[in-house]
Amino acid sequence: MAKSSFSKVDEYGFERGDDFNYEAYEEFMSEYLPVLARRSRKWARLMINPNSLKRGPLVKRYMRKGVPAEHRAEVWLWASGATQLREKMGPNLYRELLNETHDNEVVSSIRVDLPRTFPDNIFFNQSDQCEQRNQLFRVLCAYAHHNKRVGYCQGLNYIAGLLLLVTKSEENSFWLLKILVEQILPDYYGPTMEGVVVDIDVLGELVRLKAPAIHRQVSDLGLPWPVVTTKWFICLFAEVLPVETVLRIWDCLFYEGSKIIFRVCLTLIKNQTNSLLTCEDFGSLASAFKSLSNDSSTLHCHLFMKNIFQVPGPLPTSTIIRLREKISQERHKS
Amino acid sequence: MANRGGAAQRPNSQTQGKICQFKLVLLGESAVGKSSLVLRFVKGQFHEYQESTIGAAFLTQTVCLEDTTVKFEIWDTAGQERYHSLAPMYYRGAQAAIIVYDITNMDSFGRAKVWVKELQRQASPNIVIALAGNKADLANSRAVECDEAQAYADENGLLFMETSAKTAKNVNEIFLAIAKKLPKNEQVSGAGSANQGRRLVESDSSAKTAGNCCK
Ligand SMILES: Nc1nc2c(ncn2[C@@H]2O[C@H](COP(=O)(O)OP(=O)(O)OP(=O)(O)O)[C@@H](O)[C@H]2O)c(=O)[nH]1
Ligand SMILES: [Mg+2]
Image (cartoon, rainbow over all chains, first blue to last red; front, side):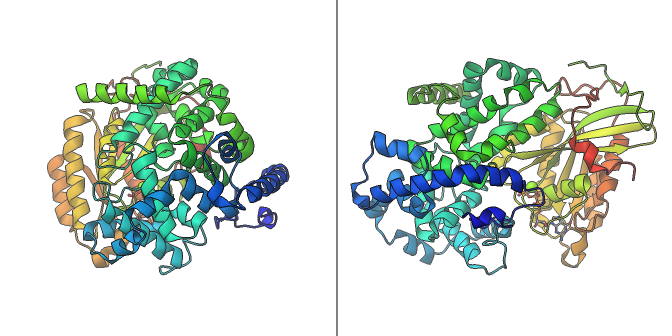
């Protein structure tokens, strides 16, 4: 890891662009490496006996402080309930799905997106026949076949792609994808993407409650919330925030559920209150939203993750549930 | 927002002319090359493997006409069918649209026609619509005849060009043709309230660096 901070490719295989700020990154890593080392020691003790992992305050705190890369796959499978689900549904499900005949149209739309998924990642961009790309193809086809209502929704390619980079196992990626789509997130990827549309409005409502000045600014300049936040929800911040930050978010997402997404959104927005409030027109506001994710605060993932539990203030699950219900009722009335 | 129903004078502008700002949306099936056209127009680049767009992307670019500088606020949307329900948000209040299809893919032309109908019904009545038959460099595998698309465009009062984001063919030209056709002075009534020929606020840097102006 230390070596990769000087390399042109990061530890997950993403090529660093010409505009990559090595200096800022080195500064960040000099703080983050000791953190990683400490977390790694702590988790190593916990993982001596993985069967003893139990939900509770200790593990919750550990998840929030980050799961070390070497344990991430295993911990995600456990925390999300994917392991149990797999036992319940039969451990051979994935293999069986691969052997079935898949819908041609779905398969071809997946195929179109393969070279368009992480074209800046060396594991995915080497050749048409590279192994990761084939794995991504199989995971997406198997899932589309398994859940015909969802089928293939653009955006799932990035999620499955990142799952593959972390777990290095197509089967584990399949189960984590299934858990995300069907249990952790409310109908984000169905035929009308109802869940995303509702959650974007929930976010708008939360911003109104927690950052009223920004909410006023956004409505005054006529910028619809979905315009700037759709990708945040659909990609779960993949391709939006730095990859290490995304994985830290997912650590919490798998353990605590979709509420985390709102915490991240609210933190991103509140962190940039000043730059958002100084915009004078629609175009500059849209650009300001676009640059939220490039701000150096998002690179400093450890601090960023600490902030998501402080900056937005209290966010009870019951509030989210109530807002989701209210908004979807209103949608169906109109 | 100040809306003076037209462009504001910017005294120090190189062209000494008016500056107008317009909202333009790109629509069309997934992978026809919407993002690639925008990338070519705004940055002069082409990526063999352009990432699929999720939600939408926002960019700006300026073109210079004789006495007017036209600044486009460009919304590049996601093409997959299930993102359709989000589309009205992007074309609402747009003064211009480019509907893109892939000349090697007949289905994408059919989808383009559906977009044209939807815009004619739902978008601002004065919206300027251009039809782009993209991937013109792949004429060997052509599935949509140029004449057929031209005839369809004529019937529907659309601008039409075959383009190639890869070779840059007709990319600047199609944006320029739209810029020329857009009304620069009179008040236009549209679905969006605050965005007809808006006054340009000089706070956006993305257009300045692009340097694609006045070719
Ligand atoms: N040969 C050729 N290929 C092109 C051209 N324009 C785009 N492509 C390729 O077609 C693929 C899709 O292009 P995009 O620009 O991502 O298409 P899109 O319409 O934005 O797709 P979505 O974002 O999924 O809606 C990419 O791999 C491009 O490299 C072109 O003019 N010629
Ligand atoms: Mg695109």
